[in-house]
Image 1: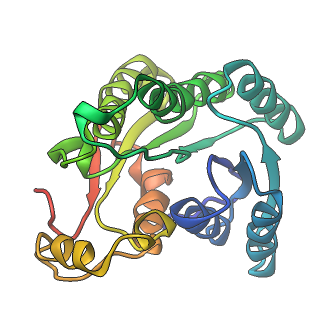
Image 2 (image 1 turned 60 degrees about the vertical axis):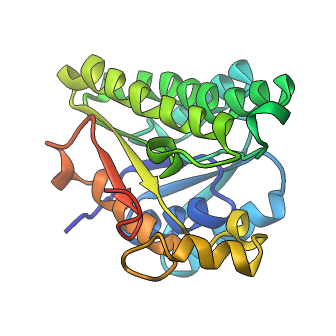
Length: 248
């Protein structure tokens, strides 16, 4: 079940955290995984090695998703090299936290270019191959705060909420070509992004999680493996929440 043999999967921001877990999960299911990174080629190569060590196939591709022309050229090159792109996990994202009165315009612009335009750039580019193949899976990586909000994250939450509308619109546009578009909204997950929180902040967050524990990147990756599978072919325009009940 959920096998991906012969599929070509591009995971943006795949060199660490949730992105790395997704790369390893898709590779384990038989997909050829393209590990995208903006900085840190060594980390991306380590993910490639991890995928191949478990018997999978992987390659690395460095480009900035926020740079539309560069992303388009890189994705086109991937499609030509591998014959097509079947799966896109638009996971690359950044967080710049600040109270609204202190949020700089440049911060919001940077967040928007990476978290929203970056995802849409990649979806637009990868979808050309999917449309020709009449099969495709697009997954945007949002966040629980995109639905419930959070103090000090107005700009970040706005970018993550925007992905819901984008995915649902893409789902409607491409449904006739058997291309689905869905969103995963992780909650409190143990990653580098949450690792820098104070112990007090972590404890406050845990009190909001009915399951009473922090999630792992592999929990998100498992949801991803389902959404991109053949078995999820009748699921599109949906938000799959992996948050321990933090938001229902």
